[in-house]
Image 1: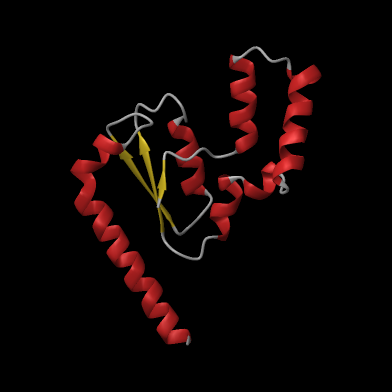
Image 2: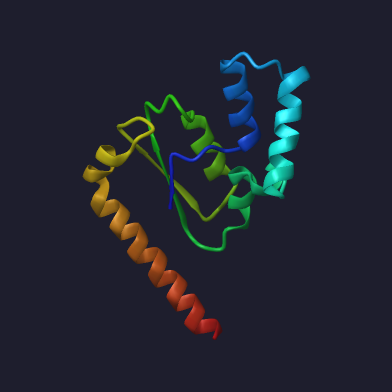
Length: 126
């Protein structure tokens, strides 16, 4: 399950730096390179829009319709990249704590089915 996830860390970092008026060609580029060097993998390696395509299990992407931190378009991009993914848009912003309550049954059912499918597949292969 994914809650309010961004599609790509590079986009998040660029938007944040633009908001803070950090000039990308002079400083931002260096900051991005430094962060990648510190964490090890590249942003391409860890970008959810890329990693979701490798998911071998069902993924429920849950996102608030009025999220101003991560655009709803990011959730839609994630779902487009994986046949295993399904989108659930909820009435809420980035903090989904209250917005999830009306969808508790849907979330539990998704987890029940996802765990059943995973367990059955493991048993059939094993």
